[in-house]
Image (cartoon, rainbow, N blue to C red; front, side):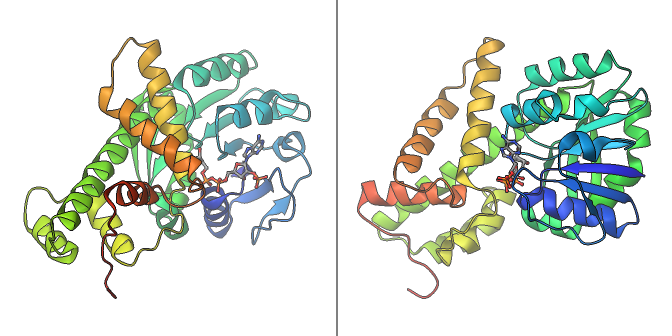
Length: 293
Ligand code: NA7
């Protein structure tokens, strides 16, 4: 398929690469020029990338970025033609997604929200899991593209339900991780060996994918970003905003949001969100011991 891929960050670059590798005719655009994708053409603007494309796929930071790329100067809107599909893998507000879909829908363009999970490793390996909102025939048409980038597609309902699901998923990741980080902090302060604690967690129902994934990084004190703290913070805020709009109270997430705020003030925004542990360590006056310790 002819695909315009807009946004070549950690996730987008790997996704566009896999689309090109699978034989699709890919044209890429990134706000900051200079990033190449093997096998893909480069366009100078979103409008130029979208010209003649069957599908425009976005993967950028936030709601404002998606809005600007679609509707700003030199935006995709200038190149829209009936029958095109816009697919958005950024994590953004569900309510904004509805508005964007209505605006392009007036021109006969279908809109699918397709946020994903699987981190940069999943993006590189083409094993992402997508949670998708949109009408069934449109999602079917995107089948070959999903297959090139991921291993599973969960259809969550109409447009915006993918984003709503993603916020519910990241809410859980953030809370599960903070539970793990608080447990490590308390256990270390009380003199329990963190490697021993991890072995026990692994053998019990406390085990989780989040702990499996993050445990080894923490023991090595490797906080390089697989999922940057600034993006998890953005998702927590999006979840709290969506909750406010829907009149839902999320007290635990509100508290965790404050921790992310303080971690940002401490200069950790570009580290992995696992770096929120370092705040707990600072307050407790300990450091969770790594493998070399
Ligand atoms: P990254 O690696 O931080 O990449 C973000 C991308 O978004 C990158 O291409 C940015 O371009 C682009 N960006 C950010 N703001 C803008 C604006 N205002 N206009 C145009 N482009 C912009 O994020 P990931 O790849 O890890 O994640 C992407 C999404 O997936 C995000 O929503 C996650 O929550 C999930 P730049 O190179 O900085 O010019």
